[in-house]
Structure formats: structure tokens, C-alpha cells
Length: 291
Length: 267
Image 1 (cartoon, chains in turn orange, red):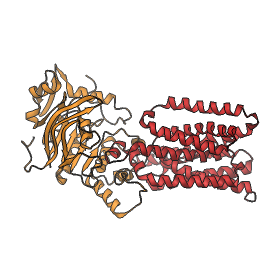
Image 2 (cartoon, rainbow over the protein chains, first blue to last red):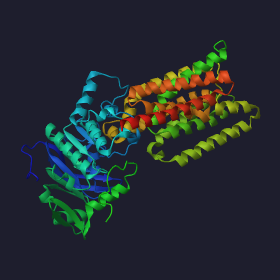
Image 3 (cartoon, each protein chain N blue to C red):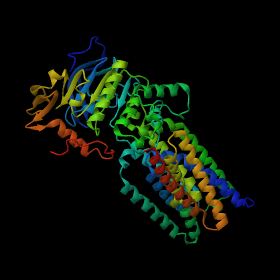
Image 4 (cartoon, each protein chain N blue to C red):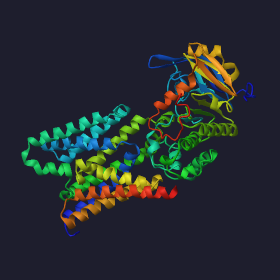
């Protein structure tokens, strides 16, 4: 299922050395050292508030690190790095907009520059290439308020792939998708990642949808981090340390459940997110809402 | 109808304001900030009546107040998100203050009606000139910020990561909205700014999904509604502002049923 340990070549894409991340006076991640290499697909997991989004924002240069060092592709993290593609959690006003997908993607192509979005061939090819990469040519002609959550994720991915980045950060792209569309998104990201041979950090509440795709897992919790293969990281002792309580890991027919005192932690977290996900169209099924 | 100076001025003023409102309004609707635009015009009422009290032209007070309020809203930025109650309180306070200012100038009852509901037939040539200047400044400024404005409206987090300063963009945009509001109030009055700034833009958004088409269509619809309203007012002797609001509402509701029909065919 998981290819054991991964990278054949070791070109570090993300390097943290004794890095500490603080947000509003609270230590989110403390003294973390890890290396993520080119061509790796990393699943980023952990309870709510463990620092998944914070870590991504730090890589994007939006949050300074308070100690240690953090390097992306060999240089210090900085805002506006074109080598990083980013799919933020989508809660934007834009979901209500009747703008067609193409213009939505294109807004990210040159939006960091002042002036008018005048049509030119280079811009058009940049946008069309990104849209073709995720197979969204037909979606791009439709208004975004008519798209399902899964279709929207495809356009968001196209937006993140503009200019072919070397590192792709996806912040909870599976939220409010049903299991089928979760699989579609994971498979798509995996395919694109392999084709472009880039590093991917893909955060999620649940491990299982990611299992077929990921090379390694980065599990965050209690200010700490564990990076390794699923077999190394998703274990009782490691997760007990990250959750600060006794954790059992149960494997059942190729699926993995992280339990605390008989409660399935990842499902609980996921459900919690559903309740606060307001504003989304509810095209997803609450397959585990009732128990 | 074009034999009279006041009619030519009315058409010129309404034309300038409609194109400006249609274009700026499109982005206002896209950003979901229509209520902010509505509130800005009300703040302008206090400014305009205050200006009258001080013996300055109401348009000057209108511009000064809306611009200040717009930039202020931009600075507050996200903190105003979902603060409709706070905005509403400021909005009614502004109308109240405007009323108080008028109270000291009882002879200005007609002025009050003109400010609140517009008096497009009272526009003189110099006001047309000021409107043209306002429109030019606003559209040039909008052109300068269009790309980051679109980006941060559609994908605020990604825009920030790519180096856009969403707060600066929002502040500049609300400044432009403020100027547009002030211009718009000259035609339909502060209470009815929605009719030209939001109605045509919302209609255009339902009919065209291509950005460039939607913006042009929005300006075109605003122009048709503004000129149509003036022509109907000339024929019927009813107020132009009434006709403009009526056409704006008609256009919007037609687009609602049109897009519903259209989506049925797709499904």
C-alpha cells in the first residue's frame, strides 16, 4: 500500500531546523526539525489547532518563525514565492459568484501585479495549461456558483499550479466532500504530483482517504511533530505523545482508526469541522453523522 | 426632449454616473460589499447637509464624508465583516445628523429631498464637469488596482500569500466606491444609490459569466436604466429617480427568471 520509505534522490524542498512557530503568544510548534524532499507526497494530520494551517502559512512566509530556521527550496520562507502553490481552505465569497471558472483561475495568474488584466497570449497559455493539467477545461467555462465542492477543488488546484510550482500546499481540501469526491481529489493531486515531480503537503482530518497516495505522514500535536511512514508514525506510542493521552491504533481491512478510549478521534474532528463549515453547499453526504 | 439645457445636462450626468456605477458596482457585488456601499451614501448625507450649513457646496461635503468613511471602512477591514448591525447604526446615525443639520436650515427642505432622492434635472453644467472628473479619477484608480482587487476578492488567502496586501487593496477600493457613491447621489440621491450601483451589476452577473462581458454589460445596463428613467420621467412627469429604481428592479427580476429558465434547459 505504501511504498516503504521513499525518495530515491534527496533534494530537500522543506527544511525545518529547531523551528518554533508562535501565534498570538501561543507556541503552536516548538523546536521542530524535519526535512521534506522533492517528489514526496506528505499527508499532514493532527487534531484541530495542532498547527497544520500555521505550518503552511509559515512556509508561505505569512507567519515569521520565532526560533530556529525554516527553508523552502534552499532559501528562507518569503511571501510571494512563485515556487509554492497553495490551496487555502475555501470559504470565500467567491463560491457565490457567477464568474466563470476560467476567470477565477486567471485572477491568480497576475493578481499580485497592479493594473488591468489585459488579455495577452502568455497569460492565456499559463491559465489554460494549469486548467488542462487538472482536466478542468469544461468546468472552466461554467460559473463557479454552479459547481460542486469537488469540481471547485479542481479549479482551486489549477489556480495553485499556475506557473508550475515546486511545492504544493493543500489545506484541508477534502472538507465537505463525500467519500467518492475525496478519492477523486486525492487521486488527482497524486497524479499531478507525480507528473510534475513536486513535493506536496496535503492536510486532512482523516488519514484513510490519503492512504493510497501518500509517501510519508507528518503528524502534528501538542507542539510536536512526527514525520515518517504510516507504519512508523501511526502507532499507539507516537500518537499518544502527540495527543497527550492514551491512543490506540486499530487497523481494519486496510483502514486505520485512531482511537482514544473507544472514540474515533479523526471522525470526531471531522464532524466538528462539518458543523462549523457553514456556507458550503451540502452536496456531501453525512456518512458518519449519526451514531 | 434635447432642446432644453437641463435635459442635456441630465442625460450627460446620468450617463457618466451610470457607466461609473455599473463598473464599480460589479466589483462591489463580486466582493459582497453592497451593504457597505449603501452605508457610505448615507454617511454622505450628513456630509452634504453639513456642507450646506457651512455654506460649502453639498457635493464637496458629500465627497469628503463618503471618502473618509470609505477609507475608514477599508482600514477596519475584516473587523467589519459580519458587522451589519454596527454599520446599520452608523448609517442611521448619519441620516439623523443630516436631519439635525437641515433643522438649522429650515429653508432647505427642497435641498433635503434633492439630496435624499436625487434631482437629476437640477444638475448644471459645472456639476456635469465635476462628475466627469470624479468618474475619470475613479475609473483610472480602479484600472490601477483591478488585478489585485480581483485576486483578493476571489481568493483572499492565496492573494496574501502571493504578496498582495488585501487591506490596502480594500481601502483603495472603498475609496473608489465612496467617490462613485458621491457621484451617484447627484442623480438618484443618497437613499437610492443601490439602484444604479447594485441593481445593474447584480443583473449583469446573472447574465454573463465572463469577467469582461459582465463588466461591460453592467455598465450598459446601468446606462440604459438611467437614460430610460430620465426619458420616462420626461414623458410621464413622474420623478426620474422613481423610474430608475423601477427599471433597476425590473432588470434584476427579469434576470432572475431568465437565469432560472436557462439553468432548467441545462439540467
